[in-house]
Length: 261
Ligand code: NAD
Image (cartoon, rainbow, N blue to C red; front, side, top):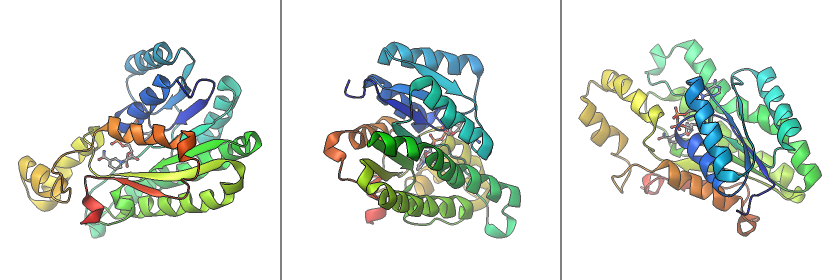
């Protein structure tokens, strides 16, 4: 439990990879602020489970990551309720798959806001507290799509490439303050986000569900296996250790070899 006494804020943590981060952080004793949408009773059950695991506190924020004011209020509440934000994981994300000529403008705006700008707002609000404590970890869930592109995902690929640039800049600005900033870039992880894009991809590419799974999703992943949320979370835990103190500004792939190909 090497994170006892530390507080982690994880955006988009009511589901998928974010929830796995929250569970792994709680297992190391951290207080956790979880965030995201979903069924209130299910979220409350997860929150209680996190407290039982960590022996510390877990709180939930319903802040919408497309709304800067709500983001800042969430970071301030976390500092007030849990004593600061020592570990910030920007993870909230959405996807939309369509050819660029047909890409809905409001989907573009939402993806840029949630997948990219929200990280600017959380970092802007949380970094002063980390600098003052001379310790902090900023982890941004990017994607293999921060390093390479796929057709029909213009907004997502743009946001993730932007997130990688933001991470490098923050790493340089925070370098002498004991604060590291890194991206974790998963390949395909089996989560609700991936499952939801199957119907759109079927339509965009005129394929069956099975063809999308094998010929699109796992086509570029040489191991032919999905990454698990737990594997992604274990990399984040490693980044919180003292052994990772000199890893900063990195974009760490966990993609079954996708971006090596
Ligand atoms: P998911 O859909 O399971 O979880 C997304 C989370 O974000 C949920 O908790 C959801 O409530 C929250 N969220 C969505 N919109 C929000 C908003 N406006 N405000 C607050 N919270 C919001 O997805 P996931 O697959 O676990 O994805 C998590 C992150 O990992 C995303 O940034 C995604 O781009 C990235 N990623 C996923 C994969 C993958 O294959 N699943 C691969 C690479 C990167």
